[in-house]
Amino acid sequence: MTLANTSSSTPLVVIEDKQYERYDRPYSKDLTLCIIHDRENRKMLLGMKQRGLGQGKWNGFGGKLEPGETVLQAAVREVQEECGLTVREEELVKVAHLTFAFTSSPTLLHTHVLLLPTYSPTLHGLPKPSPEMVPKWFREDEIPYGEMWTGDRYWWPRVLGGEKLRGRFLFEDDQVGIRESEIRVVTEEEELY
Ligand SMILES: Nc1[nH]c(=O)nc2c1ncn2[C@H]1C[C@H](O)[C@@H](COP(=O)(O)OP(=O)(O)OP(=O)(O)O)O1
Image 1 (cartoon, protein in one colour):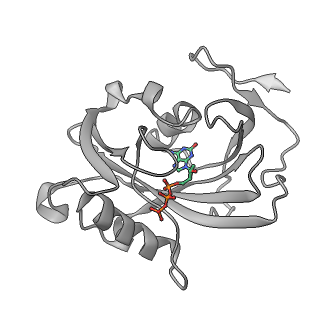
Image 2 (cartoon, rainbow, N blue to C red):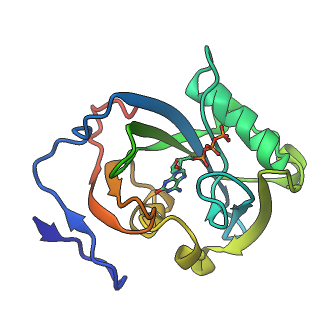
């Protein structure tokens, strides 16, 4: 095992066995997570989660797939429901497939991360709060990693920088500590999801 090269004080343990989905769990769920980027103005839209797992953290917009839904359909629906923006499937770029597990939870969370690279108020509308999320714009250099999921500081900047990633995180049950994790760049031939 090696420690990732990161400026954060929390060391990220990188496992080099290259098995990305080896957390055996009896259940799994598919989720979307959409990052809204206003590239021209160097701003990101984040939402403060109001309820459920991740309450009190800033995050992108997303949630569980409904039965019969594709990842892109779910992403479009969740963005609309959570922050009121209207995005189209064709605009969303698949940027990461991350699996999250918790030490004592039987469920593996397959999170499909998508990026809207060029937000425009004319095309997508203005963000508005929902019962689930209160949206707020942040400058690219002021993303509040200290108030987000602990692992986000390791992969969020990389997807903003244009990398396509596959990774996995095993969280402690306190949902803060990371027991182990791994992130790698997806090769050009590889299907992200
Ligand atoms: N940015 C992020 N970083 C991270 O490490 N884990 C995340 C994450 N976003 C979501 N997760 C994981 C942890 C969390 O337990 C789980 C639930 O995600 P969501 O908040 O998107 O789903 P919800 O349970 O609110 O779904 P819906 O009720 O369908 O909206 O996914």
